[in-house]
Image (tube, rainbow, N blue to C red):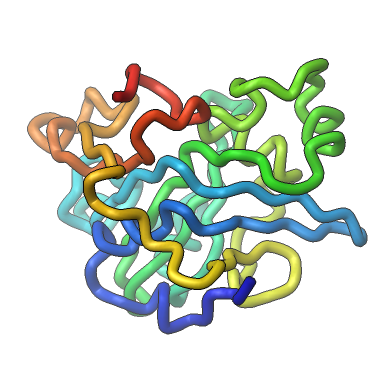
Amino acid sequence: MRKLDNSFYNRGDVLQIARELLGKIVVTKFEGKITSGMIVETEAYVAVTDRASHSFAGKRTARNEQMYAAAGTTYVYICYGMHQMLNVVTNAKDVPDAILLRAIEPVEGVDLMLQRTGKAIADFTLTKGPGNVAKALGISKKHSGLKFTGTEIFICTKGDSLIPREFMGTSKRIGVEGAGTDASLLYRFYIKGNKFVSGRPVK
């Protein structure tokens, strides 16, 4: 497998990057312990114009500062005071495009994922949903601001891992009902039929 370099993240089309992340392998290596999974679901958030984004209208606070970092930076935020959410920052510095990793299919380190999540069985709920993704991979808010080109959190590709469009689903994002008309934007992408995909039933 080959680690994605910064050129993958440093592009202007966050929707295209969100689609291309499907099928890639996200890896964490903390204290010599490796866990990884194939990305099967993503959501894109478009800089300052997207009402569902933390950076809408140029909002910039201590909470979302990592969104304005250089491409290929991790942005981890806490949802409902408990769920850690791992995002991939893309585009140029100070252009806060980001992609939420909503679901992965486990590849390596399943036993460790079970320990981290407190689950007894490695079924499809293990890494279904962004909170479970971060928990299984050992990611928390303290990991916000790391580089995906580093050694602790990175994303790899195996050959040509692009998912053909006919195997890719597209829908509205989940949990952004308060974003007005932007809640209907088709910015969620997933691998059709994959049991780890969260939210609405997929075909």
